[in-house]
Structures are given as structure tokens and as C-alpha cells.
Amino acid sequence: MPLSKPWRDLDRKTVSSAPDKPGVYELGDGSGTVISVDHGILRDELKTALAYGDAARVRWTATHTREQAREVAAEHRERLE
Image 1 (cartoon, helix red, strand yellow):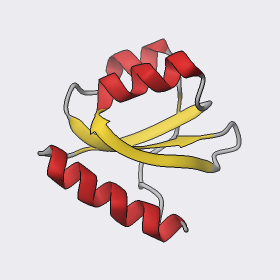
Image 2 (cartoon, helix red, strand yellow):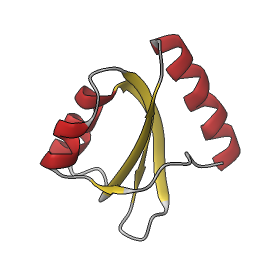
Image 3 (spheres, rainbow, N blue to C red):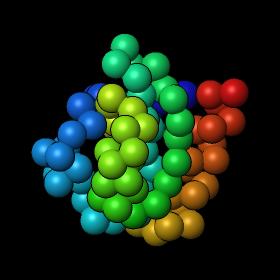
Image 4 (cartoon, rainbow, N blue to C red):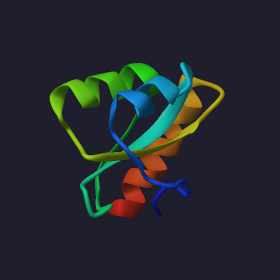
């Protein structure tokens, strides 16, 4: 099951609006197909994804801890397989 958040363009404005907190994010192509699911400190992770051109779109959800982010990401990966 994908994150229930709207897709945003993966650009500098979006990265700067991402919270500096742990969370889960999905990277997607231009049509909204999920390419990958990962977790970490959201702003840092999205800066890296933008720098490497990993995707056209992104959506995320913040969590309280890195451990919670890891667990949620694992659940989402299982559902996408």
C-alpha cells in the first residue's frame, strides 16, 4: 500500500519544505509509479535523491523515531512486492 500522501515534484522547493525529522518516503517517476521506498532524516534523504536525479516525484510521512521509520518503510516495501 503506498503512502496516503499527495505526490510532489522532487525539486529544491520540495526538499526545503521537507521536515528535518525521521520519516518514510517514496520516490516515483513522472506518472506516479513508485520506484523505491526508504527511510531516514527526510530533508537529508531528499537532498541526496535530488542530487542524483533518482526520481521525478516524492511523497513522505514523518515519524517520531528512526526505528519507527524503519518499521513503516519495511511494511510498505512488503506491500509493493
